[in-house]
Length: 255
Image 1 (cartoon, helix red, strand yellow):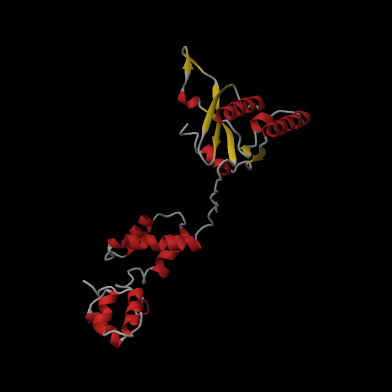
Image 2 (image 1 turned 45 degrees about the vertical axis):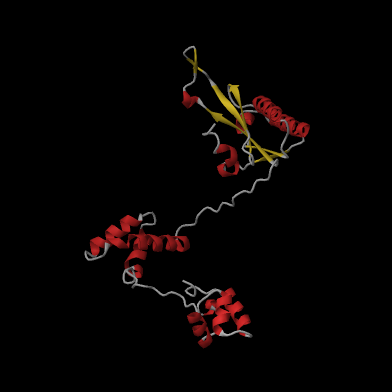
């Protein structure tokens, strides 16, 4: 029914038409009823200025327990689940309504966000098309692949573009090495038909393990030469920070 919900825009139209028209005519042009026009004549404030904040419709069921009992429980047992808190409250207060669980859960989550243990902060990465390609090795021994009944000792070199999700896999017979990385990456780029601006790998600890200082330096130079040949800027994620390589780590399972 017209007039039940008058917007500020309709109110402005009405006040403009009202300068030259009767209340009934101005209301008709603004799109609401004459009854609403008569109400506006007595109170010309826009609808947005008439709204009052909705108060609590029922009393707080946790008011008498929160500071005295619930907060001490949360401090004494930081990992306790909401249902555990509720069970303890009901054990102490047999007349407590069990339907307060949702309210209790919201209140505890809000309290923990402000007063609970510190949480890891992760800034989600925004990937640009063509910027980042990632390399990693993944162990597939759990699949139990055999040839002529004999287990195949291998792993997969895995390449992925962060933005588009383009993927390429290469079978590596043996362990991780610079040669395996270089061969797998070259095959991936040829299949892709182009190169990203940056190439990210992990710390390549397996490739560097048990090498002398001179050998490690030689391997570093060879890796830099490979990146320079394809015109990619090399980057590495920090050791032990798995989410920095998440664009390919999380894709191993799907692969």
